Image 1 (tube, rainbow, N blue to C red):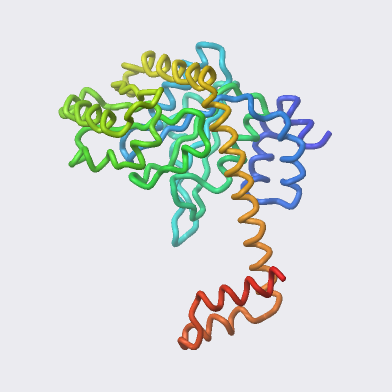
Image 2 (image 1 turned 120 degrees about the horizontal axis):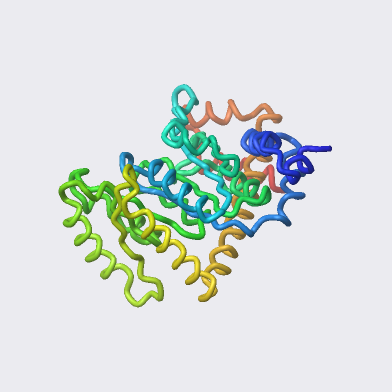
Amino acid sequence: MDIVDEMLNGSKRALARAITMVENECHDAAGMMRRLYPRTGRAQVIGITGPPGAGKSTLTDKLAKRLRQQGKTIGIIAVDPTSPFSGGAILGDRIRMNELILDEEIFIRSMGTRGSLGGLSRKTADVAAVLDAFGKDVIFIETVGVGQSEVDIVKAADTTVVVLVPGLGDDIQAIKAGILEIGDIFVINKADREGAERLNSELEMMLVLNQGNLAWQPPIKKTVASSGNGIEELVDAIDSHVKYLTKSGELHRRRSLRAKNELLALMEASVGRYIVNRINQSGRFESMIASMERREKDPYTVANIILSECLK
């Protein structure tokens, strides 16, 4: 029995191995994904994003527990930043979710960004697809938590939950245009802190200016994730958004766009690897870099030379 058959028979060990194959870009990972792809598209994918310290991991923990009470199976992808110096990642989010590890129907996978910007790893979407094929009903993707540029989650999730917290200085700084536009639901976590009402008012004002006449008006929910306050209301808001996506046809549009983005990203990565391999094999790469250092050639000219030679 191969890894795909083991996985589809419910082996969590095979699932973990399959995800490792995807992350490490093993030579047979593409063949495995081809077999799994027809089984994807069933899971509900929820993105959890926001600045560091907002309580994303604790919120995800509480949401997962509530959904398990409803009988749903859960996959969690927790993305942590990778060091640009050592290449390592602490992968500490699962420490905050240690109780979930005991639940056989919850699978948690921590991932490093491996240099990717936008809050996700390049392989996050593929790992979500593996969990989907495994049969998970709901997949949470918790992003790095780097702040204002963390918008890639909208390309991977059906519902994006933006978590904010009072007391991080200028609250408006946390409500930049990109973050405003990707949020389907906004959560003010640690709402028992001073400044929660002010943040709520400012957020309401920004959403009115930003949303216009859109059919879905993002709700603002207040939670205290550490105690579980507000979690039930947040789950209801997520359910309402899922119903809106299905009824309006927005779910089909988002998943169609996701398929397009996945294909473009795969093509870009494949072409990039092909060009790098060709230029390395030619033995001219270092000489081209040297010519740039001497200012004999500019990078734009060198790039055009490489592309014209490789794509003839």
